[in-house]
Every structure is written in C-alpha cells, then in structure tokens.
Length: 308
Image 1 (spheres, rainbow, N blue to C red):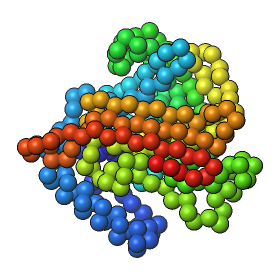
Image 2: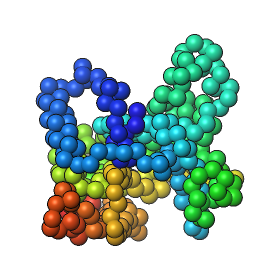
Image 3: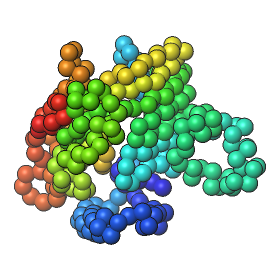
Image 4: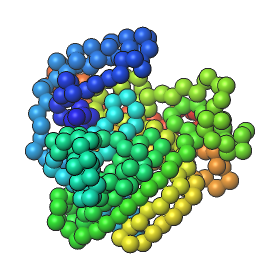
C-alpha cells in the first residue's frame, strides 16, 4: 500500500490489522489516535500525488561518493505502520520470479504486493532493491553516480553497491540498559527484569500526530553493526562498528536545519550525543500570524541514562 508518510494518499481499505494481536487498551489508543489524525487531515488541504513521486534508494560512500537507484512506480515501496520496516524491490531475479508464479503460490498481479521477507529469502530472490527490518538491513543497488544531480535511470555513470548489516541496539531515545554493568551483553539480557526503559518521541508527544512537518524520530541513537558493504566491487567488512538510525517523514522540509551526531567516543563506549534543529512550519499556517518557529534539541545517552 502507499503510505501517508511520503505525503501521498492512503488506501485505507488495503490496510489490515490483526485485531487478535492487539490488547483492548492498545486497540482503544489506536482508534483514538486515528480519529485525531482524521480530524487534522480534514483541516488541511487534500493530498495530491506529486509528479515527482519516486521509490528511491540513495547510498553515500567514502570520499563523498554517492550512488542512487529509483523507480517511478512507487507502489513497489512498502512500509509497516507500527514498527520500523520498509523496503522496495526494483527488480526480481528472473528465475526466482518465474518459480514463484509458475509454482502457483501467487499470481503475476499479486507478485508486486510481496513485502517483507526473511533475510535469506530476500537474498535469494531480489536482484536490486532494499529491505529495512528493525535489526537487519539489506540492499542491492544497480544504479548510477548521483553527484550530477539526477536520480532517475541513466542520469549518471553506472554504479553498483550491496550491503547486509545485522544491528545490535544499545540505546534508542530514552533510558537504556547500560553496557558497562553487563559487559556488553545483548539488549534482551541487559533489559531483563527492568521496566524503566521507556522510549520517547524525539520531538515531543505531539510529533506523533500529523501536525508539524517534517516528523523526526531517532530509532537508535547508539548501536553496533556487523556485516559488509560492497561498493563498486570494493568489499568492506566490519564487526561491531558504530551505528545510528533515524527516520524523517512528512510532506514538507525545514527551510533551514542542522544535525550533529556521534556515538564513537574513544574510551567512552557507552556515550552517544545527538543534536538537531531547524525552522519548521506551524500547523494552520494558512491563518494570519506567525507561520514558522525556530527550535532545537540536544540528547545525550550515557551509562544507561538519557539526558535531553
């Protein structure tokens, strides 16, 4: 389904939810949230699909290199509504696609609706595209050098890249199980028996609703990644490398912004620093009066405690 995050319409009849997996409390919260979101949408201009809409993967490499691949068919893009999961398959491996269709599992029309797969299945079936799961990132790019400014096909020198990363989270955006007290044990072991590790909305609780543009959520202020990146034939392998993850979405972008992040301090493995800010549009900006605001924040994670 198309997602509202990119400023496009939502085919609500295509969004399905397993009600049996949702408690009565969370179900009521979701319904109340949806009512508020619908009310806000009624007060805003109708969504109109932009002719610039794309499904796109951009990768930045060492020495300011930049590779990109895109597809004007944005229906190839998929995303999860309540957790970090999204992806897009630009091209399927020919033998994989034929086997799936001819084997009677799905029809050719349904083939494009395939979303998340197991990492092993994705590696076997996908020729180019990306799949971002909560703790496993995969991608194969068959595109071009985008430094000249073009993101569409054949607008630069051909280039390829592939990545496969497994992520071990340390801190999200809130208190977390400190590394020093457990010898760097996995997250599930460090958090066992503790209930004070609540995670927060990066820009405040109002940021959850479609009020301010754009939306910003830091999902992992501090983490470690293991895996590989193959950049135009050069292979980079790493183990427990510093990793950071965030998400931006919405229908607008700040007129000015700044962002700084570091979680690789020598002799301080349990420290992460993040700051950001900008000039953003206020809700109901079509009314007379002030239309923008300037804001910023600083967040520090250290020894299990979050300071903001």
